[in-house]
Image 1: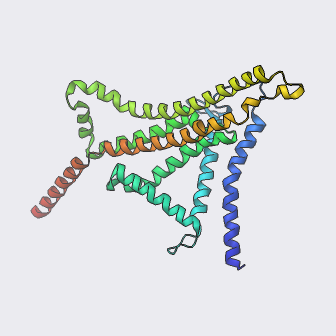
Image 2: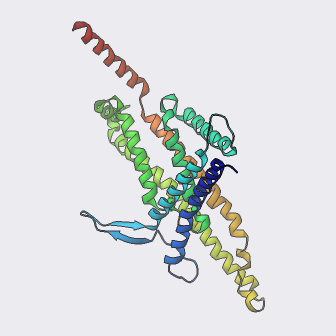
Image 3: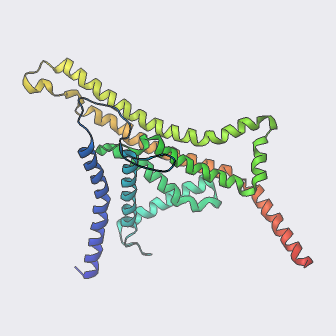
Length: 302
């Protein structure tokens, strides 16, 4: 083994370990800080500590910590995927990385158009963060997507992008858009402007949270049914919830895996459609063309 290949493999191992460490830290925090309870309980994100601020205190919650840990995991996964990439493909991971880039570029091009091709990294980052945040429940972590504050923050970011592209043609054009198709609809159009981030956040948050609630209720129901049907077994055998073995895992395939990935995809699709749909491309290009004509006219006069 050459010195170069040895260092390459060591760096690969470092990236793999750093992908696992944040999630392991989250699991350790969960085990060490979660209070013991009898049975199954449904609670929101726990508040670990509060930072005093001038206007109002800033609580550091379980969902914020887990979101940060998921982000670190994604960061080192990206470093692992791009490590050793060359023009001539010689690593299997490069095929996978190129496939991801091609699929996301195609998705962005199909839904947003050529003008927004630079949004591919943003969309894949949103997909990865949302999906992995929801899937973190599989290892016992509190999923950040079950917290309206986390998902609401993503929706606010999308709302800022939507407003930015609506202002591309100027503030007057933006204000005029509220009066279309008729001026009487201005109040409704104004309210619908803020309905977009609210609907995006509650759709994502509600679906993930409902899956968690349904899974928990089913686990409780299966536990009670197991005690009712099989509680007659002698000794410790009657205390085991036999019906909770395997069945919740099968249900988790839908509620945790499929639903989590589906909601990540839907959130990304809504982001692409809302951002690209907010941009009046034809009017912007016409406005830009008129500015260039005025500029050329001034140069000729000078």
